Each structure stands twice: as C-alpha cells, then as structure tokens.
Amino acid sequence: MRMTVTHRSVMTLFSSPDSVFSHRARIVLAEKDIQAVIQQIDGGQPAEDLYDLNPYGSLPTLVDRDLALYDSRVIVEYLDERFPHPPMMPVDPVSRAHARLALYRVETDWYTLLDDLETGEKSRRDKARTALRDSISAAADVFAARPFFLSEEFSMADAWIAPILWRLPHWGVKLPKQASAVEAYAERIFAREGFRRSLSEAERTLR
Image (tube, rainbow, N blue to C red; front, side, top):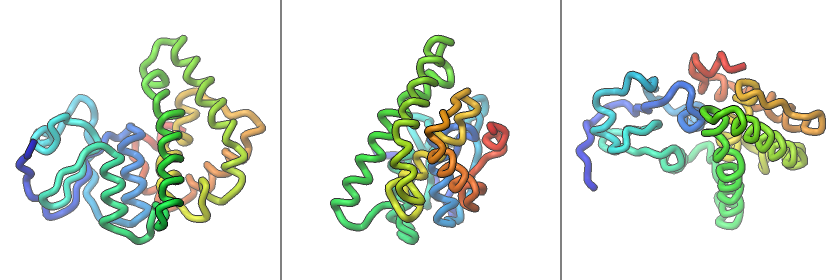
C-alpha cells in the first residue's frame, strides 16, 4: 500500500514515553548522536497525522523527509544504515548473523513476556516475573564475558536489552546474587551519556 507522507525537514520520531519499543529506537538515536525531534505521544492523545504516516497508528514511527517507517526493528536498522558511524551491527556476514540470532533470542525469550508483565492478571504477572528473572540470570556468564553483550563495543543487542533491565524494578523483578554480572553490566549501560539522553521523563521515574 502506498501512503502519502508529509515532508518534514527534520527527522521526527513519534514515540511512546514508556514503551520499550520506542525506548530502543531512542537509544539508537542517542548513541549515534542523530539530530531528531522526539514527539512523545501518550495513549490518550494520538497525533492527528500519525495515521496518515502509519496505517497501524503504532509507536514508534520515524519520519525522515519523505520516508515514514514503523516497527522499531525496521527503524533501528534504517538508522544504523543511514548513519553508519558508529556501527551497531558487525560488518562481516557471519558475525552479523550471530548478532541477529542474539536479537531474536532476546525478542523471543524476554520481549514476549512484556504484555503479561504490564497488563496481565496477577498469576500471569507472577509467572512472567519468574520467567524473566530466570532467563536473565541464566545468561549471567554471557554478560560477564565482555564489556557489552557479546561485544567489545556498544551494539544493537545492548539497545535491545537496556530497556528491559531498566524496567526490572518497575515490574518487581529482583535478580539473584548469582546474576551480579548482569547488574554490573546494567550499571555500565545506564551510566552512558547516550542512555541517559534516551530516557523520557516517564522512564526516569521507573527506578
């Protein structure tokens, strides 16, 4: 389906102030120091022209001149290719494939729990908390191996993981002592200037 997109002279990200999906797009913008207008939209006040840009009205939605993109995965891949420095995905095909598998596992093992963590009934929330705690804890050795997740440099995987770890206290997820490497990793990520700039006012209150 072809859509008519209103030309914007400045890149604009329509963003939810408390969604992990919008947050990871904001992290990529901040880490790459991309100049963009962040238009925060809460659930009760959709932008009038959002549905003109995105037939699903979903967030985040990115507008770059005559181009409108939605789905956070599409958005961050576009940003990484449009602004290649610093790169957030490996250059060689084998390493890039491994990185995509890591992103897939984070999506499958962690992101699928979000609906229950946010809006599920108590029994479902409790089950999701336990599943997320155990899954993160099981990966503690991976977090301990390198400064960033499976990498010596900040990468797309870190942009995927950081919004989850930031929200753990909000969801009532407490990591066990054996996951201390995850806590150390999180503190390194949270101290980064890019991460601090990525936070909305609503997200700052979650910890």
